[in-house]
Length: 528
Image (cartoon, rainbow, N blue to C red; front, side, top):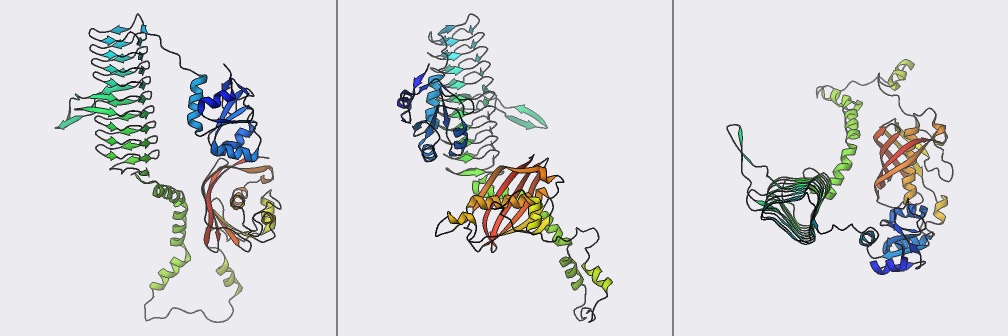
């Protein structure tokens, strides 16, 4: 069924910029949408993809809409306060779920003492244990098993092959996906004499209203009491909650989260994929943990944490950057330890304090001695000769006004390169950026660092004239101070990884020893 764009705007509380009478027959992704379709842009950085799309209309938030209005290129916009929420509502409109008709399949098994509301649905081979009840509008689909003494609330949906062990309670509007197991034995043993004796798990699992449990997730029943998941919490696939875990209201637990027994998780907590927590810790309300975080102690309310063990997110990110630099730092330290300064210091301390150091005789040295003194040590790399613009032009395809490197002053192939750029008032971009207050655009500082990185990567390529390096990623870009006419930019490029034509470089731009900008740049080499 098709809808007018104005009708959709009324449904989601938005407004139309463009033709309100446009007919919309479907919601599709940017790449597959056509003139009769509505697509969506939730992040401003996807504006370029949107402009290239054939979609007849776009669903956007207020912030994204401003960018389209400034740049043009899109005929019709459906502008809403919250694009994500509006998208969910529109997908429900265009793709309504198939209702499950009331009644029981002939192969469904309902044990004596179970109560199934006439308005509930039981699929083929569904099993309802003795003493359990299934409320109106609930659906227990094919091969799902509801044990004895369970409760399945109104409108709850139990997908195929899900299992509810005895005494499990599922609240109204809950969704339990295929393969999930609720109420299995908690992992509790008492070890005596090297033998593990099972500790009976006699509690139960309770899901409050509107909880969603992903496929193949397991929630163990309590040793005593309850393992409880608060109302509105959403749990992804392959998550494991141990016995007596307490999860608050409105939490989000992503794939492969593992929570050990008796841990409490507050309201509104967000745990990224593969977050783990040991037993008996408290994770406060509103905590957010990055993917892969390991939690070994209590986390206060509102904290943003990452890493193993968990610590504040800013510190964790700084540690990741240092980790990327560790290999280069080690190589530099080893070079210092093996270098001439260390040798000279070791020789100096070997002389007695009352015995003067040997002095070289005055006068000219023989030519052979001079050559020996300036020659590189056996096995060491030859000294690098700084390279000027001729060498740079032979390496890079860039030309004026986009050539942004003047000289290379240090070069350790596949390890490190240092180059400079003299910034003058004659740079063409200063005419418009900014008149009366010239500042080098940050994107051009990034481009200059990338060109310095390309010099290191291309110098070992025999057929470099037939190759190009393309950006594939910019990460952790930061700008610390403006670059103005008269500055000399020093680019320090350190290799993080080079593999099969792909590279990752840590790049810094300095002025007078002070950091102006830095970023981690990724690239790939392609044929022209």
